[in-house]
Length: 215
Image (cartoon, rainbow, N blue to C red; front, side, top):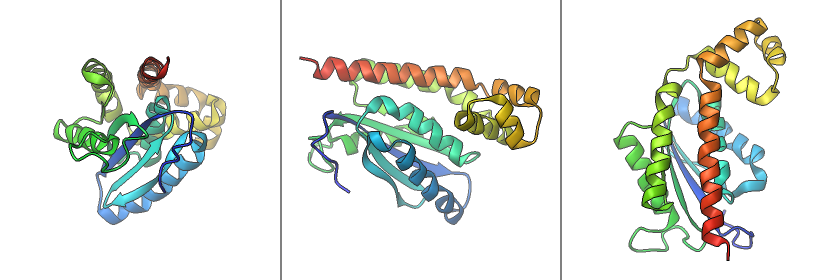
């Protein structure tokens, strides 16, 4: 589905995702519903629906780039413990797919971001916010990489359930464990630290959007 250029925001975030850790068939069976879930949860911000685009790969675009960190975290939680590498390209709607021969369109930027992330064995890379912005967002992403990689399956389950339910008591009931156990898993999984990093990235992307498009 082509991007709707009538949207108020001209700046978008194109997200390319690559999943590893199991056979292609198993990954695709999990990736498709996870991407469909993003389309539902982030419907107001979706500029191009998320979809599987190849073996173990998916992509989509958000009309509000500041939603990208949360979107990626939700996708990670849906696919855990599979490892997810993500490239995010920030650019304008006018820079549509393959529109620039020099590879500066936002889709090419996202593709290059994913290539860099996979080359450097990192979990996420942002490109398109300028040299200083890209370095800053890259540093923030690298800081939380070890925290995300270290999560156990039980920690992932608790974090995903807490995001959905919002209360440790409800999470405990769903998982059949004590509230203390839920709190321990959230703490050990560094939920708050990762969410703070996501918030920092989102804040910068909002700032970048205002600076670029405010008269």
